[in-house]
Image (cartoon, rainbow, N blue to C red; front, side, top):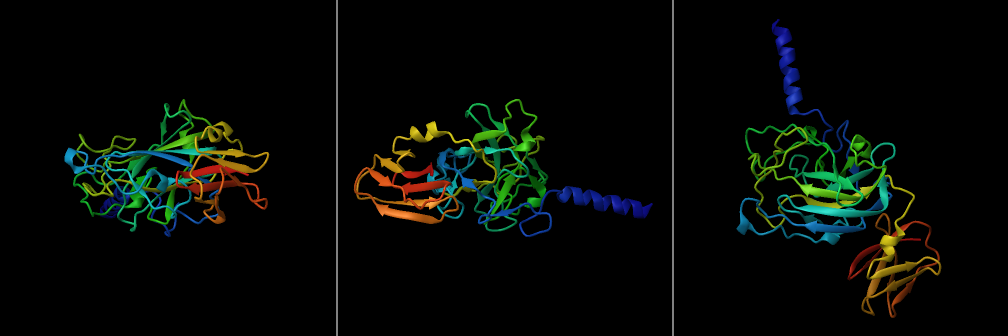
Length: 314
């Protein structure tokens, strides 16, 4: 009888300590490295709504590290943008992310340790009105607040961005959302919302089961909250929203004559990058157009200038 009780106790401790995928490099981890060949595209636009550095202190100011452009394009290229307590970022994908076999996209944060993690909820949409949230689970204890530089563990977390340290992304599978009335096979928008890690129910964030999500808090710094680096697309639709590109006020691509037209100052150096962040062309423009190099292969490219980063399809 004593042996049975001992076994049951060990099992209970194991469940309490977490049953989800462990840190990058460990057996069973789902972490995907930023330079993986599985990524076929990255977010092309990002809009950020900052949260306070500390949600219950109005004079703490807003998180201020980075800009929305940091989340555009490949991971490890443009720095990060800090969302602050409860802040959010909406990212646009063209072509849309598509539900295919396995994981469909991955989110990168800038955690530098396996055990110091900040989390964010993840949602998808096609109209920015009807959002579907991934069902998150946190098995972290909720009896004692994790201190600002305290420990959090990936094996206790499921379906929250920020589960893995850099340079590893947290993958998500759209198939998990099939029961939603708003589910489609493709989605053009993704919203990432910082988890407020307080275990105070009037301040903090809850997982899909109603548990408070305990993470390092408060963090009243310029880099408060989730630090978004990038979102990599693993599976994407073959259909491109050409109207969205054509309506960009600064940039238009005429595919018939392979020319880019600008409404930006002359004598500016612009650069074209491949979908993996590799520089393929650079030129100082002397007119309002830039001819696309004839040797560019078919695919997705990013053009960078002072107005931001824009995507076009060759």
